[in-house]
Amino acid sequence: MKPRIILDSSKFALTVERLCHQLIEQHRDFSQSCIIGVQPRGVFLAERIHSRLQAILKKKDIQYGKLDITLYRDDFRQKGKPMTTNETDIPFSLEGKNVVLVDDVLFTGRTIRSALDALLDYGRPNDVELLVLIDRRLQRHLPIQAKYVGKVIDSITTEKVKVEWKDLDGADKVWITSDHNE
Amino acid sequence: MSALSQKHLIAIKDLQKSDIELIFQTADTFKEVLQRPIKKVPSLRDITIANLFFEDSTRTRISFELAEKRLSADTINFSASGSSVKKGETLLDTVNNILAMKVDMIVMRHSSSGAQAFLSQHIKANIINAGDGTHEHPTQGLLDGYSVREKFGELKGLNYLIIGDIKHSRVAGSDIPLMTKMGAKVKVCGPPTLIPKYIEEMGATYEPDLKKALEWCDVANVLRIQLERMDIKFVPSLREYSLFYGVNRELLDSINKDITIMHPGPINRGVELNSDVADSKQAIILQQVENGVAVRMAALYLLAGRA
Image (tube, rainbow over all chains, first blue to last red):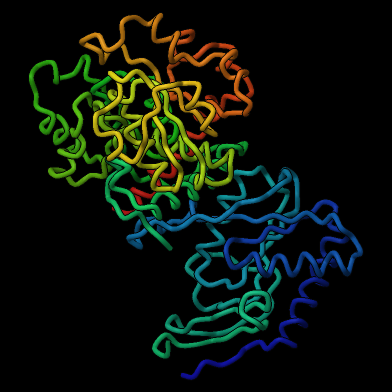
């Protein structure tokens, strides 16, 4: 199968815009809520959403943090190499907050399970919601569901979904490729 | 994704620069973990670590044990006193018996230089050297480097001075290769009887005059006079040592430079270091202890991942 684009940059922007408005519908002015991006790739989406939200709401104080889940993974040492850690930066308390956890692709659900464990070590949030750009709904290993979804795709395990970012790869795009082509 | 080039942490001289950088980077993560309300992560929950201390220790042992517990590993402690070592069991037998109980990693301190290197050739578990004789104490070297990096941003280009008993010091044994690998310059200072003969081959130079040495350096690591390792007299008296090589406020004020002072502990106050220096803002001695836990967590985490 040839790599094909599932979201090009104009659709990408629209999707992010819709997700922001869905968030505002639920969280109003974000005074009791915060955005947490999952390291490493979820942070790009979280940053984008965070800056768009601040622009739409004309607010500069929406709380935003980055969460590294490496130390909480359940496949540590199964890959034969230790996984490199990333920065965790949550400069506020999560106690009683409504947390929006942000990642780029929801696949097996294991990352999000680890992220939930990691979050709880920072306090007891009031509630936690999940926002993802791409939901690969057929590959779940755990009972985990996103509340806000950019796009749902049905793909098989050997296929790969790649999210590219303007600041990193030149353009906002989402690709689907099969492993053999790489 | 990167990994250490070594399966064991026996000596700094076995490590590559990239290994040291990886340990420092990982330690940054753990330092953040240690600031949290819940200072614990589940990474090593399926790992059992034996702390084998054939020689006395307080700081290093507590530091390792805390590091292991913060990583959720199971730990067992062993000290030579009150064990079968007294009944004549060999080192290899002792360790193999412990490993037979399904232990994954070993942290070991031993009074013979090279004990850990010997063990590493005979057993499968990962070994971390917590000090071997007068050879090396790699996690001390790493935490010293990490503490200096924290203060100055990087080690490259710094002038690093080690004062005291270089000959019997495993701290110097690890600090010298670590600092030179990371691009710092190293000088040692102390009575000529306590300077190893081949100091230049280790990558350091010797300066007998303490004041001159202090004027040269950015950081001075003051070592403890190790009375327990001196079976013959290397210095006439502690009083004389302190007179020539003791670091005090008066001396530091006489040089026109704000030097950072380190000490691996335990301090002989009034001998190698005076209280008016040890408790001053120039000293980062307690930061070294704090960083020790994060650095040891990084070493344990990275080695466990290599299994």
